[in-house]
Length: 547
Image (cartoon, rainbow, N blue to C red; front, side, top):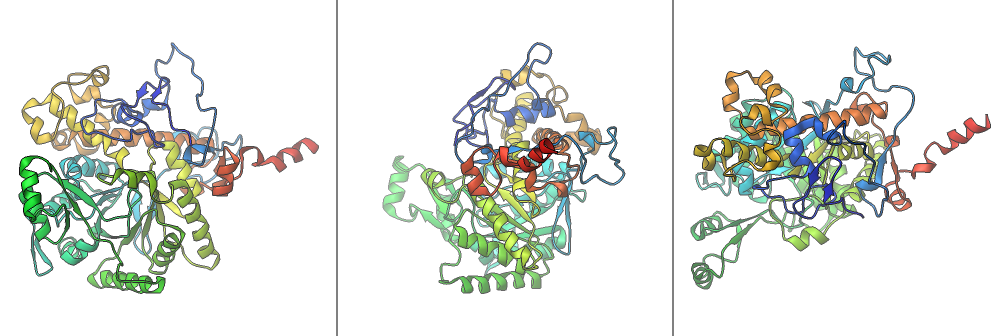
């Protein structure tokens, strides 16, 4: 496939490093001074939908070729008449059928419906230190906007202050902090989801969460992710902490208890030690055994009292994909997140991330095919979220259409973390005495920010006053700038999605269909089942001409 250009002169965006399919840099730094499209959108909001310097320019598309199979080789259909999926109270008049009236709310779930104001969710933000540092920005921003956020694996296990006795958690301050800071601003839209892996299950995370928070929290079983086919990982630079993690039961590499490793660490030859999680289902050898084990795990969670359960699976092959869809459907799970290769991570072996697994668009196309098989059998197919290198509003539309009607959400990882980093850096630069506390990296605002504003968040963030209207002027002192940036980015994504939907004459999310996209090359048509551009409605066109 072709990758996006490093510089987009039309909207004024620049990638610091090599851009990937999502338009983000391959390496996204917390201290980045700009200015990719997502970074700028976290400040300017919906203004980034349009070419810069209006009134002084005209612009033309640079996207003239489509090579290979990727989301960038799908294009969005537009129609010249009609209006479908009109929300309640909206007529089909030209005065009502305007893009701000497009309803982008969504919901997912079985007996308990989880509502969201915008059809996105975060990826799992777990034991990586960057997730902990910027959690308040991510969580408060998600709660204010009204989309789900996921607390990833191992949060309790790596917490030095957590107390675990005989497989039962007594104290879990970091997990509590994350849940409570989200719930403080939760208003009925979105969800807080706690993910579990092998170690979390052993440590009794599910029992602790249900006993303390009840049905306020959704629980998620994890099979894998799109960035790696091995357990979750972090790196630590403290030898004592590495030893602590080994005693907690983790796989730690190299082994910090070996004298030669300790000597190399003290000499400086080894500067970091990796903590790994375990692989699931290693004691099972057949599909039927996996199914039984999975169903037993779900039954146990329901016995504990969980009303909402989800599953996260990675970019394994077709067998695992089919298993995840069928098991999640049969177990009446509320959500299945399918994460394809081409996404991001807080830590993964680089060449593993580059070369393992099924690329997102291929995995998502097959997910639709397999879900359709179950639907034809009369099954109520599990609601899905698609993930893996998706960052912009066109990605949201394309993925929703590719997986329609099963896909309810688009899971976005690094793209919704960028505003958290950016906001913290701005807040630290404007408040130098709090720079360390805020995890800010800047001594002063870079030019990419000062060209927008330099004195206050009110002049820097396009969404500042929208957030203030929601929480009140007095409460704004408790809202991190990173959360304001999350709101601002979400507003741009929402407006962009509404515009695409209005052009496709679809005025609510359930109306989006596979017919709303087409393939820009024959290879993409073959792999996705989405027809080639000039084949779409070609028969109708010829009928008009012959009529």
